[in-house]
Length: 294
Length: 294
Image 1 (cartoon, each protein chain N blue to C red):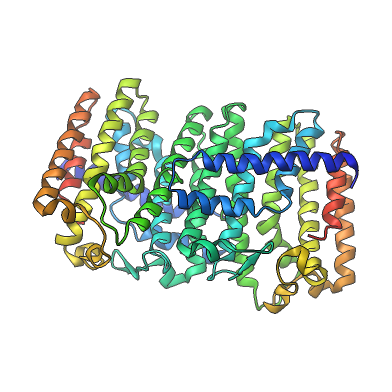
Image 2: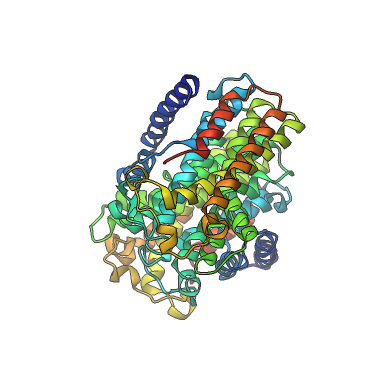
């Protein structure tokens, strides 16, 4: 990682962590609910989605902080999806990033409600953001709901459940991942482009970028599940194999999956160059996703 | 019920039922998810919230249908809250309105996701409603998220859970109900007033109306839980008592609860008169809520 990227990520990650907890602390809501919401927001990870959003705004030469409410909303929606996915009736995971999952600490009922609360509050944050005009806010809310809802992440989660214990084609697998994780990544990128003031051609290039980045992200996730370091991942490796899930390595062999990953990373960077913007940081973030160990 | 009210409710209820299912059918999402979402929307009930929204718009002499997207969103959010409330880790209810609850038919994981999907799609519907200007849409989304989120319905649900097996004061009970059911009712009324074009004084009167109507609604619910007809309710009577919940009849005696109900109905109607609008339908709907048997 270069110093520039390092500094950009550290500074903005700190801001995000601080603002996420501040936003929850400001709520007039039962303390236990706020604790449960904060707990999973704190359990954190790399904040890759909001950082992408910031980096896209920066590629237009604008202040990334213009995207703060959208970035917080995005991270809240990502976090709610993890809380609900971990529930006993879903993936039944006890650990996430080395910490007990939300329902292990607060119980199932509270975990469901903490997720519901984060999802709902996300939309409030964007609606309340007076630094953007109402038309921009509405179009971002529209996009976020589409990316996170039945046609996006929620639908992808259902398709993923239905695909367990079945052998999928590579197309079916891509379709599931595109909805389950790709669409929320695409919100990060397109919300950033909207706030940055992208023209139509640039929107199209960013759509291409997000398509390839999303698939690259998922392939590297599948590779990590086989080759990752348990201590760094904070969860057991091989959990997908244990659940008989179709993965890129299982469908393409490990070598094939790695080739496919390189292809998507290459295409993602080509799309970035077509925007004719200062996309240095975004290119470096793309590389980071390809070689990540977390 | 007068013929006018009857006709208004029947016509608009039919429209709502039709449009709710149409909106789900239009989604590009896994069929099983759409089935689960539709199942609970179909299980229906009186559609009291969206009908109130329509009646408020009509009191301004405007076409109630202007509020259709907000009405559909509202009913989707109400429905998601019922699906999640019924889950085994929450109220663990097998029946709702005489039908098996969502998780009994589709399983817990799908029920959680159907709820998540309805909640998310609700915001998309309002955001996509081009018949209202972006500023109005943003302010409705803001209000809806506040009413449904951690400071509203979700927070009320947590407070309600925490209040079980505890004896509450009447103030604590009112506070819980205000958030758990009152805030979503207030969205119905205030969204209607916004679309109708209310001036500041009228907004204040509608706020008063919604406050008293919400408490009246909850008291009549508690009364029904003791005196209602199981066949009409579609669930066992006395379920609150079985759970050791504080209720209006348990805190105030049945006679006291009925008096309190009359007080709130009286105040609700007084607030309506202060709007100086054609609130005939709304007054009749208020009476209906006070004497309902469902």
